[in-house]
Length: 622
Image (cartoon, rainbow, N blue to C red; front, side, top):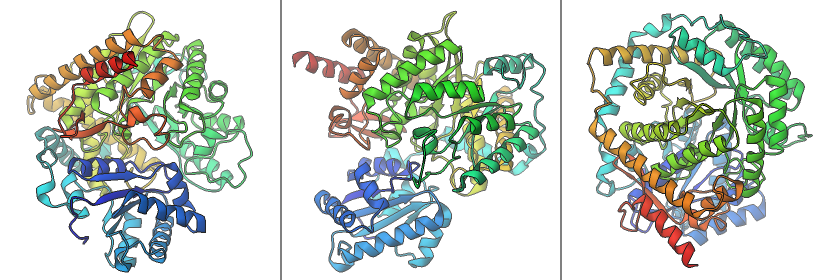
């Protein structure tokens, strides 16, 4: 076990640059900040150094980063291949000894922590005989902090407290999984409408057909095996698609394409690392994927380069069910692309025009990316609303609300409900005869436990949460993005995907029966939820009024860039370009009663609309 930490300890967290799925770093950072500790998250330059740590100059730069930041506790996260994780961690420990920064050789680092997949954690635990605390992602907030070494008295009551609503849903999930009745379900017959499964099929037609037959929501799943061999990976993926299509559980397959597929489509990849995901590099690859998917609808990530052209390619090859863009994200500030934020926005607006011309729906892949970087709940909702209004301005007729729950994963359920309801209500107010809104909730990326039985119960529990967002509408949500229960330990196979869908359907039906039988609290009347929803809704309305009045042509690339640059939506955990966005990263956020708020130096929440007013007044004065 590590030494008990002291007030002046500084935590440094690192990850290899190739690993983009290490959201636990931000969750743990938030917890430590709430306990009063300083946290340094390595930026892209440092993560690149860590990825090639054996090089002499990189080793020097890594040591420099540790010394200059005064880091005394070091955390290393790696959620890709367990053997690679063990090798990378071992290399770092060896080199930390060599450059004499560990405390056992009189260096500043008192403790080193590792977070990764369960197999990687087990390997490291055995190799080092439990010398380094390991984290598999299943720990509660209190367990995480105590394993790190935080004294119990330093942990705020807000973290220690639980939520009765969350406990009820998890109990519901456990009982549902124990009964195993979900295993005996049969898939719905989703055929029977014109153009089903053809190139003229649309997600709008499928939603309307499902509602006419009074069936449960459409299901979308992110699918893609990992294989470093290009040819073998594509063959395996097509095999998976055919299996999923024949089984009949899945409506929309979302291609889990590789980073290179998004950033370098059609180029010569050479020896560039794939970074996980299906390697897709030609229009023929996409056409073959569409053929193997019949009769499922197909969609995929937007590109991070030549974005408008790639959107056209998706139309012509996979008849993409709907497009998704992330506006401020998937560019240089998060390591997912090479474009500046401003140019990225320009490219996305141009792509919006192309999408509008097709009549296809558009999904704003936006709010949760702000949450990943420490944004408060008001900013989460504001960013989603701004994206929706921008989409409407440029001619989008159908808008899909992407609503990631459990982000951060320590968010209390009623806070998730409030955030979701406020977002849904605000965007629904934009509806008219030319603009229709659909809701698509999903579980958080780092929500699920590596304990698969617990993860199954969590899947049922988060499905219940989804059903409480708009409980008065039997057809809501319209689409559920099912995150498979195996998320914490590895990619989901078709068998796991199908089982996850069965659990989702069983949970929806069972939970709705409980509500009809009055065997649970009516969350429509839940006071804390309604008060928080009212608060978020009204504050965001005020924020929108203020920024629309001040920023000329807000719903343009320049307007959207300016509000981000000026700190309208705080991102304290931004990875890169912190100098450019110094006004956005300067704010502190904290977990307050299970929700995220911007706080002052004394951890007291700051009024969102007052904060915006002050930003605007400062700009006027300057």
